[in-house]
Length: 511
Image (cartoon, rainbow, N blue to C red):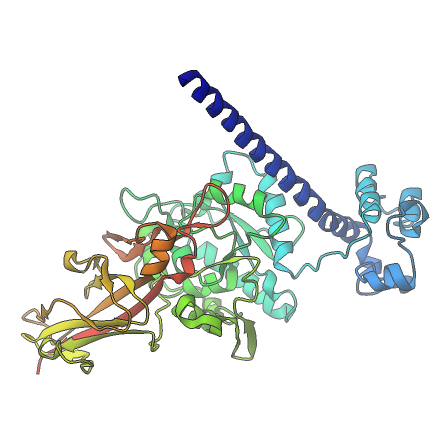
């Protein structure tokens, strides 16, 4: 019987491994097919678009498929032999004169593209173009460098004012020079292949591979990702299987493919990131960021701040509505079916706004038994303060206390407790105090809320946070919400955006 069981186990293992190989093969085939239009666009960019791009010499615009295929019929889908474009390229007539001709291997790609039906060529302003460019760059990097490679993008500005794009490029260059570790030569800012709006950095060259917290794997770039509001995991992109290779090699605190550079410049110019980077990199503590950093994020950060503040499981369809901020229309969560949001729940900059589905306030402990006690944000020394919480759904709640020095802790009495739907929960009272020489003190309490029924359905424990503190660095709370599952399907636990966060400030003041 034991032999039979071992035999069955061996057969099962073979079947599972065969299925894995088949899935990997299909993913690679899908990726290669999806990559073909990008490769052809790059061939045309190098050899043809100077004359047949926006200027349309001879009436031919190679990026206009309707003009190319239907009107001028320079390309006949599925028939390279009868396509004038392929005939001119293969015969050496195009590009004309002494210009370098299209190599044979690139002619083969052009032939394959036409044979596949001449699918539309990608727009270089799309995010998919950024991902494709990143993957090509990552493939060419030496294996020893790959764990330290990160990408910054200004590609979202391509369709806007080019003067703004140039300004942000200079601002990024100056910020990287400013925040290179003491004693290291400032690196040159070079765009990656295929685009002049996406940049690769090596964390070691900047000193950003340094850990801000002792005995933790986080580095300085991870601190950036804890704040980053634009992250999405493109799980339905044809490039996702290969993108996972980059994300797993990078082993970041959050699986973010790239960071918007204009947002980064803005955030690195102010607390908490500015002070943390100065401290870890050995810079003078009163250093001033480059002047252009004030230009900041040009792509509607406030709209994303709003979304990051509001939990999807409480808001329902609200996150699918467009928000207008400073004239910029940001369609929030428009790619929800194709990607997973990676919201900055553990960041310090983005604090949620109050909303009726999570009520969280500081109250006078004498009012604890009231059905709806009034909030009391300012206390006198000797007063007793209690926290009061009410959630729309039955939830698991975690409380984080941040003192006046920025140090964080999870009080033992407030670790992963439960709330009942619609029922108020008053918590243990705390005696408010001030040091002898202080007139006023300010501290924060933050709650993380996850629906209890969802946790039961997933059969996973509450993803409690880990508090990180270090001398000279702002404290953080890191939740294991954004760890990639081994099957490549998303996060562990699933539906990471169901975690809600709410922060209040409590003051103690002498009368």
